[in-house]
Length: 322
Image (tube, helix red, strand yellow):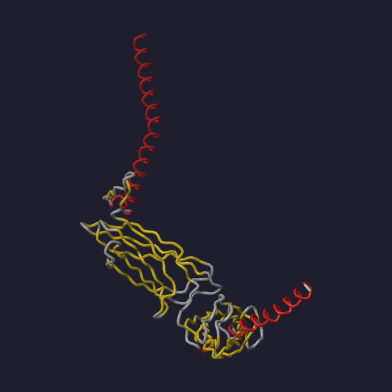
């Protein structure tokens, strides 16, 4: 009897467990659909294009399992896969519509077929695609150049009362395979403390041969006893294609001890005058040359004096002997 009673209890528990699982499945029932795909090109250069892909998802029913998108870009001419991006997993609340964005950075070619796969719980539940064409006809929003500002150097050329004339040398390198296109160079000196513009100059740049560096010099006239951020920019028509920055400190600061006391220094910018320094160096070299010449002439003069004295001594002795 005990055996029959135990069998009866087990038989009753099995249907009850199945009913609970069916109830949970009905509670979690939902459907995720890919409703629409929108594509925009926010950034276009001469060689690349950024495609912003926005997918609209509908979740009908209960909360979804972990959901993600896989976005692929196929070249329409070759059919080759150029780029794949996946979004992070997320759950969609019940009866909701969301938009998920993906950015694809692609070479600027004729067109792409954008395919989107929707994953829920590790399996594909929906997919769709859209084709974009004539990307080569888009006007560039960001220009590119093969010229880079590799280095900046500064020299003091003149100090007059409270103003300093600083020569800025920019090292411009063409990293491309052909001559660079003509550009315009803008150089600005901005006061670090106030952000005010102290001076600004523009100059035209001709083509730079491939894999070569050109040094371009401009002079800035700024007030003394200030620190400056020197900003350089290369322009192609109305677009900035390259930037660089350096610093000139005519009022530097330093930390003296552990209490972090700030000491404001007052450098003598006259010490950095290249023109005066060059002239002084030339004068010093000339003085050394004269001294060397005199030193070389001195032994010859001494020998001549000795010869005269010896001859006089011989003559005096000859007279006395007679």
